[in-house]
Length: 500
Ligand code: ADP
Image (cartoon, rainbow, N blue to C red; front, side, top):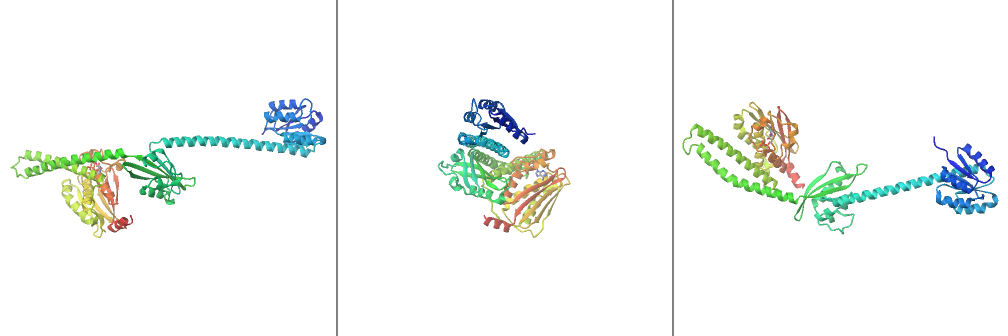
């Protein structure tokens, strides 16, 4: 149960003290009394007094002095002056000094209780207001600390940060951003995005993220930008309000100039080494061929066996070098694609035909199941040969004796799907995302028996993506694998090109 409010009655007349007690107690108040102002002040300090009824004139200390003292010591306790009719002017004077109200003797019961009730309401409102003000001050302080902490963190970040509002205006950017993009510190905030960064691709990415239909929490756009000699990776993401509406975007800029330089050095190195090795190896292979063909004299069976093994090793090395050169070219963007409308059935038939002998050697059945009316795809012949040779060779190589490999194709609306399926060793689910990485080879005992570089699928994926296509794998360990390759038809690719 809530504690009752305490009313202090200060009056030198006992009859008034008792009268007030009799009137207020039945209303649920706790009443304490004092015979003069001094006693009243003592009680205000020691007892939990909520409101004071104070006689105007008392011996020892009257209401005016009580008000003066209480004003500094207990400012939140309202004081109601008890006064006779003749002294109303004095009571008004007391109100000027801070009294809450006055009641005239003899009291009317309802007037007295109403006055006390109002004084308590006022006190409660004042306390509530004070609490709210204190809370607001605390919140503002916490907010200020939080803001200053955020400001410090954002400004000390080694990466550039750029924040826009939903109108694509820049509302925040840090020191690193200004340094990386040579942006002037005198630009206004908020300010137009193009004043801060004139990269059109970045502006378009931010506009895309701000569009309502892009409001997926996980959506972000990664881009590479070039600013003078500086290469940057920009990762832009939207941020959302409580109703999931896009409020703006945050872009983080990471300086990748050094990585780019190292990457270029690596590519140059691979290119140089590969070239230096390829020519002598090709010459050795040719000379081996001449010897194996018997043009340099008869070979004993042992010599033939050794020469054949050496020949296979040289071929393996040449394959590795060619793959390395392919990857280096692709990564440097130097791979030229001569895209023309290509009948896929022809490409697939040729690849299957060329690999038939190897499949037979490995006792694998290799079948082609492609309709005649496939729409042409816009592609580079040599690159597609490489893609399907890689995939079909893998299917044959990773299949046991008696395995089946099928190459099929299906036409969908604006793309063609090619399926290269085998009944081979399969790939574990957790390995699937890794097999397209450069040099990655699955550590399967059967896979180890196949000579390979781990570069084939990286090249395949690079070529397919350069043709605006995609590749997907489905596999069950011990049952088999199917690679699905999706390529846009020539007409769809043409529309895509011209739509930008
Ligand atoms: P590799 O030269 O090793 O064949 P790839 O990049 O072509 O390199 O393939 C990467 C790895 O993916 C292979 O080492 C193999 O473990 C796995 N792999 C590729 N194709 C198949 C397949 N059809 N069946 C089972 N595993 C495969």
